[in-house]
Amino acid sequence: MSLPAANIKEANNKINDAIINIMVVDDNYSNVELLDALLSSRGYNVLKAYNGEDALKLAEDVRPHLILLDVMMPKMDGYEVCKRVKTSDVTKFIPVIMLTALSSVEDKVKGIEAGADDFISKPFQKPELLARVRSLVRVKNLLEELEDARNVIFSLAIALDFNDPYTHGHSQRVSELAVKLSGFLGLSYMEQENIRDAGLLHDIGKIATDKGVLHKPGALNGIEYEHVKQHPVVGEKICSPLNFAKPLLPIIRSHHERFNGAGYPDGLYGDNIPLGARIIAIVDLYDALTSARPYRRGMMQDVALEVMKIEAGKGYWDREILMSFIATLKDTPKYKSC
Image 1 (tube, rainbow, N blue to C red):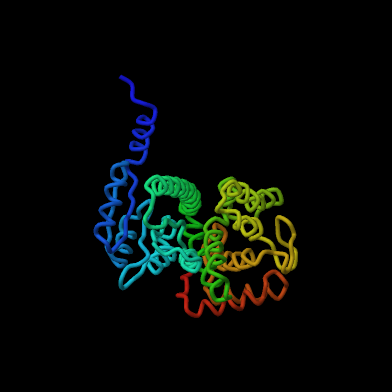
Image 2 (tube, helix red, strand yellow):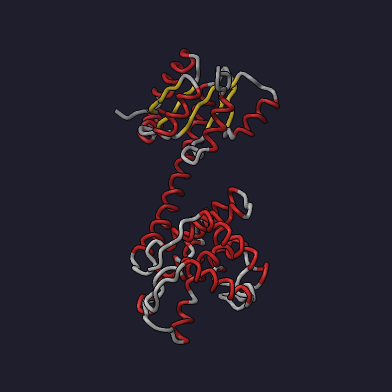
């Protein structure tokens, strides 16, 4: 005996949603139980919290697919809970639907400013609530797929470093120092995050560079040097299909440009070079000079910085950024020469 089409659709929804965790936050026990009954009947796994503090802890521990959040709660209201969820690196991508009896424009603006993804007025209509839950759960699943792609590309970059005894940990060190420098320069949080990611990925194009050339114990000939110079372009091509990497592409492509126009691949000069690329270029050189290479030992920190000052005098580097970098190193443990 076949099931009606509507029942088949509902059964499929239950199967697809079987592992979806929805957190309900409300200080009213009856409201929580009502939502639990509704969502559980559709195959969702319901997590319950009756105050803001418990909700934040549960959100960090479990990382649910969605949070249904009451606004009017004692001690910590829903606006504050939402704000903390959205400003935490651990939970910021969890969609939040605010449930509220408040209906003024000011209340909704306050919720938007706190980071809410949607609003549902009380008393809610069951079909509307379920439709919005399904919609935001799909968004969360898409974000997780994007995060998986992001993690794959970062893992590839780190593996590339660890596969080379001469660059072991190089990209991670460049990333960490570049973020510290960008913070010292007063860049915004988002700019610092882009520079952090670009630092990790700046050399990913070397995956296409001949290892015999990279590990050559002497000077490169002209053909070999031209081959190595392709890695920023290759890195840009590898990352270009990824939406999260769009702001990183100019930094990855231009991290070997020189302030006087003598760099590659485009011969950019001065402020035409993206600021992030100028930052990465200086940190990249510092780490290269203080690390061992097939053709030399690593330099002591003070020696490396003197070399960089001399080269800045020749126009290779943005001198203001270099001096800021030197200032940041006062609070950074010196790397040992290899």
